[in-house]
Image 1 (cartoon, rainbow, N blue to C red):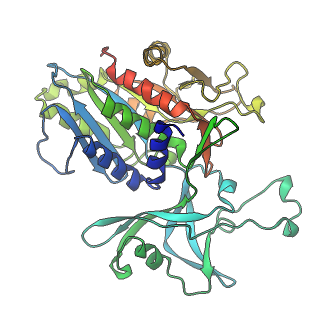
Image 2 (cartoon, one colour; image 1 turned 90 degrees about the vertical axis):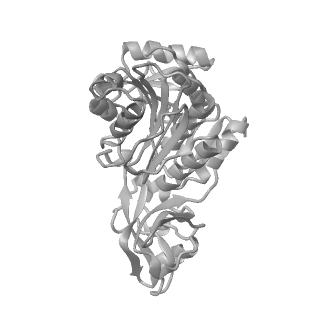
Image 3 (cartoon, rainbow, N blue to C red; image 1 turned 30 degrees about the vertical axis):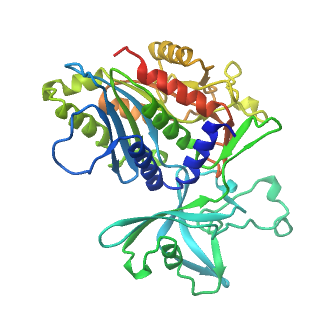
Length: 418
C-alpha cells in the first residue's frame, strides 16, 4: 500500500466504533499540536492554533488562523463517525439449543447477508461509576449461515429474519457472561460496569486487492475515509478562514440526536468560537450563513454486474477521483455554483473528478449535507469517493481515491473565497 493508504488502514483498524473514531481524531490532532478542550461551560481560547472537542461519538476540530478578519467565516468538512452494524442489546446473554449467543439489534441500513460467516469482535465503550473505557475484542463471535443441504432453495433468494437468523454465537453452553468477557479486554472489573454502548465489528484488517492493487478493501469505509481525509487536510492546510472538521454520530439512523448533524452541536460550537473572537452575537448567524460546508460521504461507483441500476450517462469509476453528488430533490445539495467550486478545488489539487446522479427510477440516498444546511443556512456541496459494496461489512474503493479526496479537501480549506 502507499504511505497514505497505510495511514488510512491504521486509522480504520484502530477505530472500530464511533468512540474510537473520536479518540483517534483527538489523539492525532493533539500530536499535531492541537489543544484538546474539555466539553464544559466557560470561555474558549481565541489564540491562533488548533483545537479539538469530543462529545461522545462526535468530534469537532478547528484551526484559527494567525490573522482573523473582523467578521470571520468557516470552511467546514462534514462527515460522520458511525457505520451500519449491529448493537448489543441491554440484556445480551442469550442461549439456544446449547449455544451461547449475544442479542443484537440492527443499526442502520446493514447489508445483513455480508455479516454471515465472518469472524466478528465487539467494540465500543464500557461505563463505570466515574469514567468510560474504550474496548475492542479479538474475534469472539460469528453469525453462521444455514448449510445449503438444509435449505436447497437458498440460492434462489436468501431471506433473513432479523430477530431469529442474525444472532451471533459466542460459545457452547448456558453460562457465558459476554459483558464479563468483553470487560477483560478493557481491564475493567465486570461488576464495575454500569452501562455500555457496544457494536459488532469485523476483525479482518484493511488491504489492497486486485491484480495491480487497484482496490482498497476495508470495513467502515463509509464514512471513515472522509473523516480521515478531512483530518489530514485540516492538519496540513493553512487558510485565512477558520477551518473545521465536524464528524457527527448517528448519520446512519437519521442524525436526529444531540451528537448527530440534526442536533445543536455544530451550531453551538461555531457560536462559541465566534464568541471567543469577540464577534457580536448579532452577527453570528450572518457569519455562519456566509460560511461553506463540504459534506464528504461515500457515493456509488458503477457496478459492473448491475450497470442497469445506474444512470447510463453517469458511471463513476474507481481511481477516477472524488465524486460530486447531485440530486434534483435536494437529497444532495450540490448546485451549479457548488459544481464550479468543486471543479476548481479538484483542479487546484491536481486530482481527477467525476459526478454522480441517481437513475430516475432508483431512489437516492442522502447525507448530513441537507440536514446541516437546513439547521445552519450555509452553502453546502455534497461530494465523496465512490464505493462498491456500500453498507457491507467490508466495502471497497479505488486505491487512489482516498488520497484524491484528502487533496481536494486541502484545496477546499485553502480557497480564499468566503
